[in-house]
Structures are given as structure tokens and as C-alpha cells.
Length: 167
Image 1 (cartoon, rainbow, N blue to C red):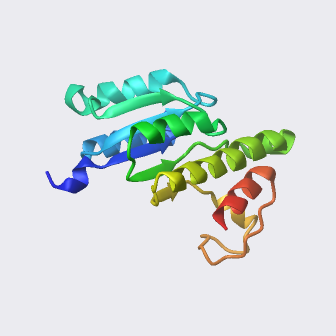
Image 2 (image 1 turned 180 degrees about the vertical axis):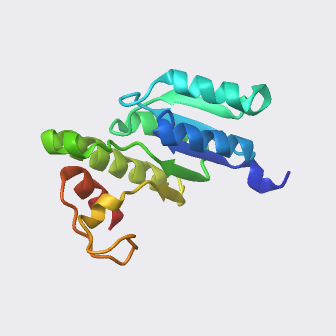
């Protein structure tokens, strides 16, 4: 295997639906994966299922850590122990209706958590990130499908958190 297959990837929110599917594929592609998740919208058993699907050999390349991006010490611990080549960031709250009812929860989790992640990544020289965004940043576009040069018009707190971080 080439050196690219020795890379360690951090997957935030990796115990969630999209996170677990991504983690399984990364393992199958030969990557070492660390998952950090606060288990707010997920369960640790989902990571256990990934281990089963990946098999014993590939599961050795998976590390799971309960942690919250809003807590810089959780991130500091991860980055001080492991040199990550890249981060795939799925650790955002995503329910539009709930974001309208509880906007501060979304701003706290999505904005503060991501800004902390950016800061710690910069401190440790990790410069590559895949950011899970959302088409909700486009509001109600006049035509579909949406493309990246459409006007940005987030219409709810969830969409605004994604929009703030996209810029």
C-alpha cells in the first residue's frame, strides 16, 4: 500500500448516520479513522456496528472518542495525541424545525463547535477539511437543482449556522 493509505482522518459526528457510512468506506479504503462524537444525535452502538461490518482487521484502524467540539480540551486531547491529515466534519445539529424552536442551541453547537475545531486544526497544522454543508443556505431557490453560485438566503437558524461557516 502507498503512503496515502496510512493517513489518519478525524470524522466529527462519526457515530451519526452519514458519519458511520463515511467511516466504513474510509476503513475499506485503507485509512486510519478517529471518530469523535458527543452522542447527542447518535449512539455508540453505531460505531460498534461499523466495526462488525468492517471486520476484525479493518476495525483495528478505528478509534472512537466521546467528545464535544464545544469543549476545546476534548479537541486538544485528540490533536495532541494524533496527527490528522484531514477532518471530515459532520458534527452539526441539522433539524430545521428544531432550529427555529431552539436557535441558541444551534448557534452554540454548530458555530462554537466548528470555530473551536478550526482553531485547534490551525494550531496543529491540519489544513484539510471536508465540511458537511446544506442546500438550506440557498433558501427557496427559483430553480432546481441548486448550484454553488446561487444567491445565499438562509431562512432558518440551522441554515444560517451553515451559511456563517461557509463564508
